Amino acid sequence: MPHKLTRRKKALFLAIFATGTFLTAEIGARVYVAVRGHDLQEIRRIHAKRRETRLVGQWLDRVNDHPYLPYHPKAQWPDSEMRGLRWTSDDEIKPPDVFRIFCLGGSTTYGGYPAKLEDQLRSDFAGRGLRLEVVNAADVSWTSAESLIDFQFRCLPLQPDAVVVYHGVNDAWPAFGSTWRPDYSHWRTRLIRNEPLVWDYFPRFVDRSAFFVQLRAWAEGHSGALTWKRAMMRYVPDFAHDPYHGVEPYRTNMTNLIAVARAHRIPVLLATHVYNENFSNERYLMALHEINDITRSLADTHHGVELLDAAALIFGDDALMEDVCHFRSDGVGETRLVGILADSVRGQLPAWLEERRPGTHPAKTQTAYRPTKSTTPSD
Image (cartoon, rainbow, N blue to C red; front, side, top):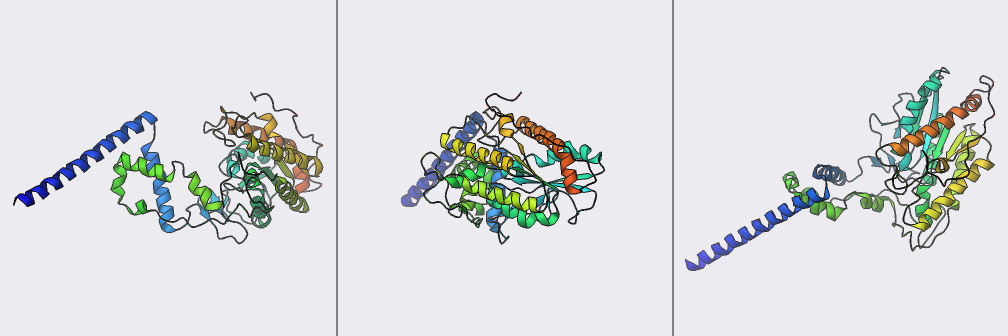
């Protein structure tokens, strides 16, 4: 009997100790959350999406089933229709009264300006008897290589009337690394399967614990960016120390994209990319600067290509950018970008309409707006 009592006491002690430890950790986690201003509901939401993605063995909003693209957006109503392109038209065959502008780029296009650009320009086209459709043909982390393939095989069959390209930031990534190939195959990989983690099988009620939610978020990474990078990159470049191989593939890809567009009499508007001039890594900024210079030179040397030097018109800094290339969620930077894009399109519209229907619209000679300095902030 004394022996059994001792075991019970030990078990009771361990239970009390474990409960006390958990309560201490839970109280500490809730204090930490309050002090740091973390949003537990948002962290839970992010994990729920990741969990669902991992358990089904694929990404919920991306697919890798295209034979020539490593991944592309999954068609999702209402934002993505027609092969995963972000627009809301039901007309795969373009009606005669529709003018389609296709926007190419990476995440700064995919999650950014095209829908707002359509809103700003709709009345300008309506006044000419046309219905405008601005098609978001971009995707997160795409380089000029993916956009070239995307334009050739997914966009051209839908009869673009004009193309806007806001690109370049992602082409700096494969320029750094111990190995290098001009087709980016040293760096890019087809989107890989998202494998489940052990806590994906835990019952959902454990999410009520702030300590568990914070611990899991720490283990996964709060934003999930590293998970995404590991899924579609062979390695994450070390911009400070990796060898730099230059950005000439960007010139080649964009030259080929322009050639395809002009072969189909599709005018091209190239925009230099706005980036944070205060970003900490100077070598990465050097690559972005070279990419923008290539964009400027392409507009200078190709017929039917106009330049919008957005990087000269919008001074990127910490007040405007949330990282090296994305505008803050307050919308100030994106509103500026949409405004100058809309003005540029308005300036080119007579020439674009003449290109679309020769002889039916008088074309005007336009001078591209190309500021030469970017040393002062935009108002």
